[in-house]
Image 1 (cartoon, rainbow, N blue to C red):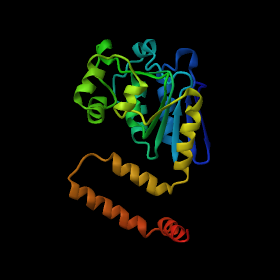
Image 2: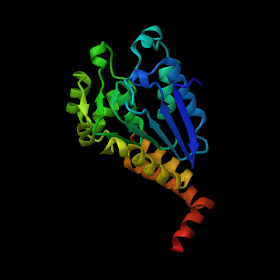
Image 3: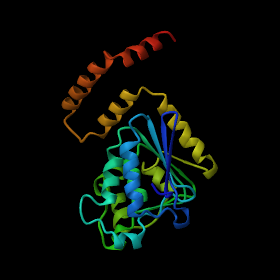
Length: 243
C-alpha cells in the first residue's frame, strides 16, 4: 500500500481517507487498486465505512495518469473500484468538502449517506471530455433527481453547489467544514451499534433491482422469517421487552 490512501478501523467503523492533497486527491490507477482492495478485504468485521478526502474530496481522475493508463477492459483498476464500492455490504458514508469532480460525484450515488459542506462543489464533466457518464450515473442520476435535472448535470457538465445537491437528494445534509467530521462520525457510531446481519440484509434489500411488489414482499418475508428465529433477533427483541 502507498501513502496515497489511508485507512484504519475502530469500533466497527472503517475509515478511508484519500491522501493526495497536493493534487486535490486526483485519483490514479494505483489509488483505484488500493481502494478496491480495501473495500473488498477490510469490511468483513465492520458495520460502516467512512470515505473522506480532507479539504478537497477529489478532483476526479488524474487526467495525465488516465491517458497513460486508460481503462480499456473490465479489469481496469477504476472498474475494480466501482465494483468493490457498489458491492460493499455495509453502509458507506461519504464526507465531502471542496471539489467533487467526475467520479467524485458519481461515486456518491453508490454511498448510503452523504454529508457535504457549504464549500463543496460538484461536477460531472464527462461530456466536456468527449466521453459518456460512468458508474451507472446515466441510470441512477435520472432516478434520483429526475430526467431534466439529470440532463442538465450530465449534458452540460456544469458545477452545482451543496444546496442544489441537497435539494435533489444527492446528499443528506449540508454542514460547516468544522462540523463535517463530527456529523459523519455520529452517523457511523449509530450504525456501529446496529445488529450487523440486519444492517447488511436491509441494505441488500434496498439495493435490489426493481421487481413486482408481491415478489418483494415474498423475498422480505422469507428473509424476515429466518432472521426473527435467529439468536441475534431473539436477544434484541428480549432486550426491547425489558425497557
